[in-house]
Length: 264
Image (tube, rainbow, N blue to C red; front, side, top):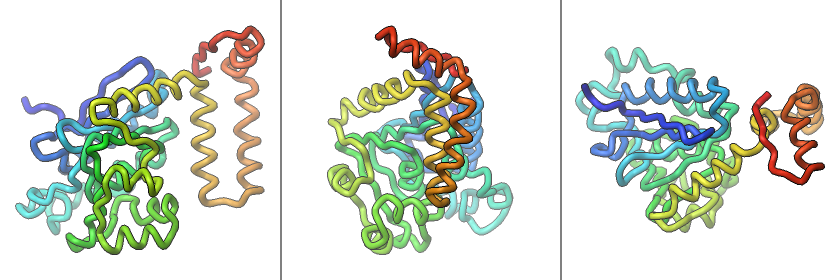
């Protein structure tokens, strides 16, 4: 029996999702796509999960779509057949990832190229190893950023810098990514997993309903007016005021102790 191409482990309230094709630098296969989406949906539905951390097995985070499979007519982009007919953008990992209410952290262990770069950028937060790289190699392969990059890059970098990176197909070192704001932190390779985990657990220690509502409103704010967002935030606030976690947050503050949130 072959090993799963997506691994899921629980670390307290943190779900650790690992791309698991290290022999192929975690290049995305057709099988991997559906497994990844299913795991992400499972994490979003599980009330025990408060943060999702995504990383890669081995030396790389994700080398993009598996071009070897595609050249053999069995992978994504192979020009037809059963693999192509099953590919639905509505269920694809970048779309599912974007719509998650649970916070997502990319623990960027190595190179992320093409599709892998889009997946990393689709996470809310990125903690990078000093060995990590982001490679926008799409135009060098005759394609475009098909998995969120054309939407994400201009919003993160601004139009001019995003155009430079995408049109030229630039490969950026971890330091360059930090300087441009593409990653939140760069840490020594032996410490990146610990740094990402510590941040994940810090977030998981807060009231999960409030964290998820905050993310939901930030996502909606990308495409609506200030007035509309204020209105939607107010509607989100009303049920939070009635939650057990709100009472616990107030009580723990007054009693000067660490809160114990239940997600209710």
